[in-house]
Length: 224
Image 1: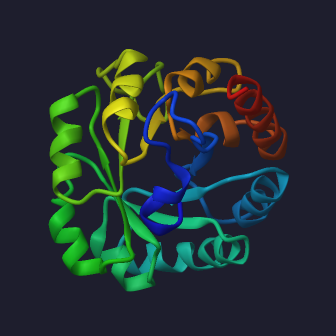
Image 2 (image 1 turned 90 degrees about the vertical axis):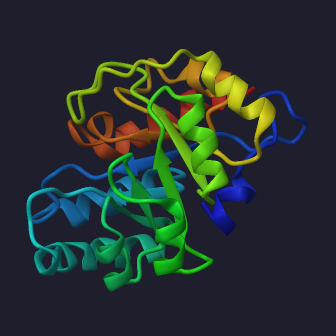
């Protein structure tokens, strides 16, 4: 996800030279204890573009404490460290960027707070209008989903695959597919034009290293 994620993005689903889809890991709720070791194993198992720190219901001081070792692990492996929801926390810890839900603020305000080099993503559910608005506001990527039922973050929004293809054919800003994605069901998302697959449960509910390797194989197969 370097350079506003643009280096990793193609201009269209069938554009010559379109970069291969990449994995974007999202943390589980519990990131203390043995989790830093799990993150290391996941990132060492295969290519991962970014890691999103998504922890709810704790104060910013505690969040910063939990984020510190994870941020170091990501930095050592050149993996972008993205904070979910909180521009204030992202600024406090010097994160690589922030991911905003529809109720978490405006991309323009996040850019003003975090600077030109911050990577700002915006959840757009199944809405083309929201995605275009996010792009106009300066988002570095847009996220569509939930493509499949998700226990991690249930959603009534269920976009069709052609939303990814439509976006890829018209816009240079990368798109992220999210929601219930597993190695078994990710192939059509890759083929449709997703630049990134955002994954949580499929990675952390079992062996994280095996999951990353399985995703890498399926992404490779779908992209050829």
